[in-house]
Each structure stands twice: as structure tokens, then as C-alpha cells.
Length: 91
Image 1 (cartoon, rainbow, N blue to C red):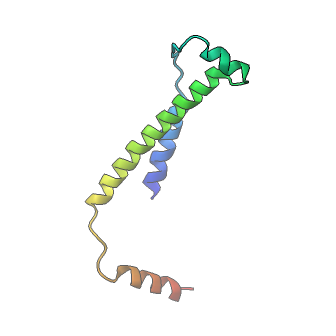
Image 2: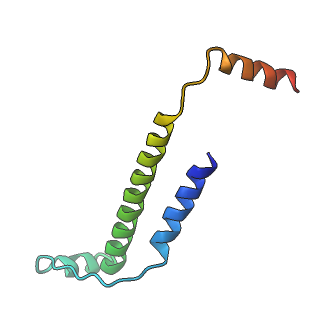
Image 3: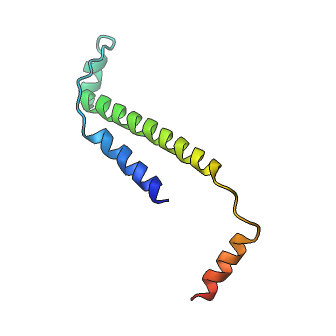
């Protein structure tokens, strides 16, 4: 579980530290329409792209985690029952 958090934190921080310029062309009047309604177009585009990058990295990390889990052998029969019983008895 610790490696999942490590992947998550690594993915999250990678999205925060790099800055690049992206230019987007849209139909005439769209930007004006949005700005007249109080929408900061630059911030909306930036936020969308950052969220898209975060979700994509998270999806890749989860896929990697899933592949790691598939390589692990299944728990022996009765393991869950013994573990719960052991935990209850220890308190």
C-alpha cells in the first residue's frame, strides 16, 4: 500500500512543477461569450489540462499497480479467517 501512496504523490508533484505555453484556437466569439459570463478562459483551460494530465498519470499508475497485484500469489485458504481471529484475540 505504501508504494501506491508513493506513486500517487510522485504523480501529483510532477503535474505541479513544470510550466509550458499552450496556444489554442477556438471559434470566433467563444472566448468573449465565456468571459462576459465571468469565466476565466485561461484558468479553465489550464485547470482542465492539469486535471487531464493527473487523471492520465493516475490511470497509468493504477494499471501498473494492477499488474503488480496480478503477479502476486493468492492468499492461502483460511488466511482471512485466521487473520481476523488473530486480530480480535490480540485486543
